[in-house]
Image 1 (spheres, helix red, strand yellow):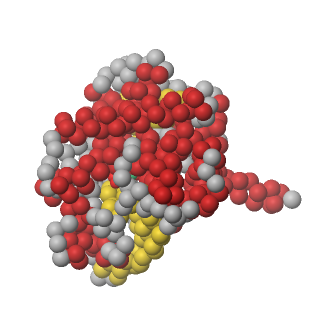
Image 2 (image 1 turned 135 degrees about the horizontal axis):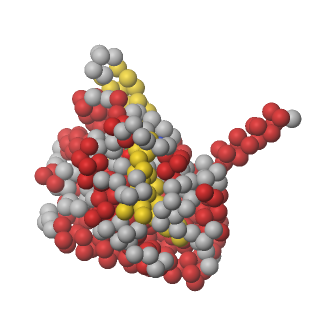
Image 3 (image 1 turned 180 degrees about the vertical axis):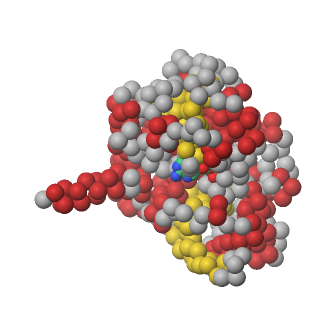
Length: 426
Ligand SMILES: NC(=O)C1=CN([C@@H]2O[C@H](COP(=O)(O)OP(=O)(O)OC[C@H]3O[C@@H](n4cnc5c(N)ncnc54)[C@H](O)[C@@H]3O)[C@@H](O)[C@H]2O)C=CC1
Ligand SMILES: O=C(O)CCC(=O)C(=O)O
């Protein structure tokens, strides 16, 4: 009896953190609210294409290690699929599928001519040399080369990948294609056709969203106490932008722990000391856990690391009034319900983190036209897109009396559903 109960509750736990299953539930709810028939859900609940690849890499010690990678293409009715590639030990097939669905929703929300795609490789780049990482990046591109390309599916950076990895991938694809193909991938170094503003775009988008959310709550960002989980691309730039705007960043974290100072952390010092994987807490003795970080007293909480950080276990203890999801999938469905019932303003990932793919789109457009914009031009276009998307979703949530996540899914799913219908797929 006791054993059964334990097994049941473990299953319940797994169900709560099953990102693919919970994404499907919200997609289904959104389609039902919009009045679409079941066939639309049947089409959109899975990627249209999913490739699993095995990538042999000659390691520095002379052995050959075989890595497993994935590329999911969710829906290409609107246009080519687009989305980042993640290098992380916890990558799974279902996670990559869910991430590709979220990319489709983001493209719909900021009105880009794309569907969603996503890739991942099970590996720990923190344990690999530069040479091994280059071999892995190039091997992945060779393995998926048939299904990607500037007009098919366009990768980009995500967790533990960066502009150097994009450069190797672009170079490998260009060799296969026998053509210089900057539009194959975004998030490249500027000298290889990267865009001004892409590196900080995700954080800039999150900053814009935070400002809009704060206005709705009558909160002045200047002086507001902020906690940011994750100190990589999204989290570190965000901490800097908020710090420069006069907010007090009282907590930050990385995969190994968290730092807390109620008087505000020295963000410039931490930025200077962090490594390329967003690790900084190892330099300190007086760290707290990621769990404690999320429950700190603050006005704004920004999860900017990995999935399933706010669950039904800690949602009751979150003190922040505004929670803005810079990470993909940091809050479970059960926790979303709890936070909404507690009157918190929760801005969902598919809206809050859409700045990255927006500037990736600008990068791709610049590559296609061979003419490049200034950082000010990029910033202006990004501002316009994100503010429009925020207001659209905020108003949808108010008028349809739904939480912002469901409102975002309703806004995000519509374009691909319509495009699939016009194409005669459903
Ligand atoms: N880079 C981009 O343009 C975009 C990133 N995102 C999302 O933002 C989140 C962070 O991505 P990036 O900043 O690009 O990654 P990154 O690799 O630059 O940084 C990741 C950060 O998360 C921390 N981390 C890793 N595993 C962790 C764990 N198990 N617990 C706590 N912290 C952990 C790392 O130590 C690091 O500080 C991800 O969910 C990603 O999908 C969303 C949109 C675009
Ligand atoms: O920049 C892109 O194309 C994709 C960024 C991404 O992977 C994400 O928004 O999760």
